[in-house]
Amino acid sequence: MNSTKPKAYSYIRFSTTDQRKGDSLRRQLELSENYAKEHNLELDKTLKLKDLGLSAFKGEHTSKGALGKFLDLVRRLLQTRMKLSKNN
Image 1 (cartoon, rainbow, N blue to C red):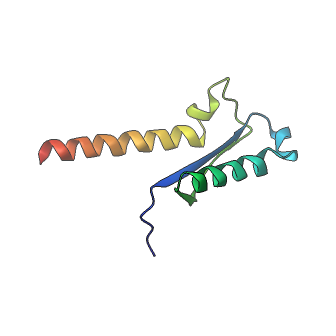
Image 2: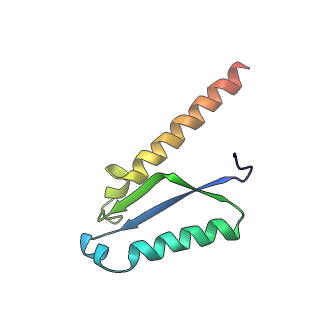
């Protein structure tokens, strides 16, 4: 069954691998689920956007992490849509 709700994508990140031992992962997942529910969004659980142990301060999450790959995909999708709209 296809949902008519807009999709939300959860991004989970923490800076050090030591944080994996704590509650950061569970807490961030819970916050994502609550946000989607409160805003009537369908939380996509197929795309795993996690940068566990990558520093945002150093920019690692965008240069070699999941967030950078996701943002690149969004940019390419937008460029494709813009090209299609210009050709129509």
